Image (cartoon, rainbow, N blue to C red; front, side, top):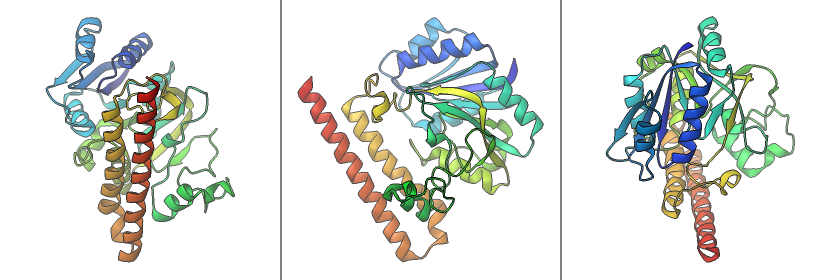
Length: 305
């Protein structure tokens, strides 16, 4: 058993949470599991209390967002290392112990992530990202990156030029599987609670690298990820997602808010005002398109039902 505290923030993901906790307990590789429940209405907190008495539960009376819950869990955690894990992510055997051993041997690594595989077997590229600079974002959202998939110049968003079969440094990974030193929080500060949902991992990784630490992608460790099952806006998991139409609309809006917040906090100061204005307008437009699509799908589902 490794010196690791696994942290799961839960919000109306009862079935996924049960599967995740069963997986973790069967592996037996963490010395502590903490669930912070953000006032779920589906019995998630009761599930942990009744079926998983060895899991530490922090049940909040209201949904205070991912970052507040993450900070509360970190304050309660006893492990040398923290694994932030989504309820929809399921590590394979040896992953938690292996990552702890890796960070023990590589002191400059502040954060590590594994190879995340989606339900269809493809790689979740959101776990293998570059920072969303204006150029990286433009080439990605415009589709220019598809012209030369291995080009370092055109594929900075998902680091498409990297060898995904070999360990290598990346800029950021997602908080659904983020393995870190607990001491990192003491050095760079806690999760930024201005981010309610989305963008918090981009911000945290940005601050980690600014502090001089590296972030590693380690494909020798595999994790299954039911991407988007908790929020219902990803096509990969629409068949199992339980999120309401209101939740889908809200998380879509929060995604746009997070992009604007991150850009204004970290990137805007590096670019002229005209470019910043164009970037923020593009984010707003992208958010409006996404929101319209979610509304259209929600209307179609209502008709079908």
